[in-house]
Amino acid sequence: ERIAGRNSVLLPGFVDMHTHLREPGREDTETIASGSAAAALGGYTAVFAMANTDPVADNSTVTDNVYRTGREVGLVDVHPVGAVTVGLQGKQLAEMGMMAAGAAKVKMFSDDGKCVDDPLLMRRALEYAKGLDVLIAQHAEEPRLTVGALAHDGPTASRLGLAGWPRAAEESIVVRDALLARDAGTRVHICHASTEGTVELVKWAKAQGISITAEVTPHHLLLTDARLETYDPVNKVNPPLREERDNLALRRGLADGTIDCVATDHAPHAAQEKCCEFSVARPGMLGLETALSIVVETMVNTGLLDWRGVAKVMSERPAQIVGLTDQGRPIAVGEPANLTVVDAEASWTVTADDLASLSRNTPYADMTLPATIRATVLRGAVTAYEGSVRR
Ligand code: DOR
Ligand code: ZN
Ligand code: ZN
Ligand code: ZN
Image (tube, rainbow, N blue to C red):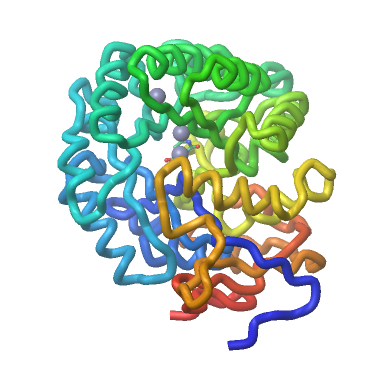
């Protein structure tokens, strides 16, 4: 099959360590099929489906079902993430070993969606994970420091009376779990790093020899809390949009390897959950179909990363961190390839209604963004081509 064209950049297929697919439970906002289509169109060949579904993915029945449905859809490899606890804010560790041993071979466990704030529970989770050689991904929120529903932070948020989620709520957990990982002799991964302080703390922890890794979302690289001026709930997200100095620190951290990779935190929500008052709207933004463009805008067009660096942060590092051996690496001759072809010179205007996601909560509606995905190839088969999925 001929795919090539002018200005094409060939990259290893993207790997998203952080996607909310909403199945089971909220198939009105996203399904494994619709989310897989969005992923393929965004250049992804593997996604990690977060555990805050209904029921919660805290047992192998749920994780194996998500895995099997992903295989049936066949557009992207769907790797379920297990919940660390039974229930989202449970007081008891989930049977991680059972999920790791199931058909899905769960490799990562997370408290995303609701933080496990109990330090002893996290200590035990890290010790358990070490024995299983699986990764704990930390949502990094100390809920006792946040004003729940408001959940924002920064000068605009404060002036508007929306401030609720201070930097300390994130950074205190980053320090705590870096130290817990050190003492347990195991790894910890920080989800959606959003502050300058988190970048400094991760840098410090890595310098101590602690096995810590971190991801940043496209929206935390680009957007600031100045967006809250309009009270548009599309800008409500956890952790909140912060300040320009945070964008810049996260970009520098991603460029120098302190922050390991980009993860979307793709979080679809129904229109009625995003049209209401700011304080009651659900947090979260779509991310899969726009991620590469935002990385080009913030990292390539600013001279912070070259295309080699894009391959690293979108594919190689996430594949290494989670232990995917079939992604994020060069292809041997004759081996079925996982790859993404980017048109580096093209641009496109985001139309919410044209996205493959079942939800419409993109913060980039009507914005013109650089770079398009020309094609995505999963194990040698084209899954997306020129903006359409191939089934
Ligand atoms: O904004 C967010 N939305 N952050 C999270 O941690 C969870 C996610 C969701 O599930 O909607
Ligand atoms: Zn989260
Ligand atoms: Zn947490
Ligand atoms: Zn999330």
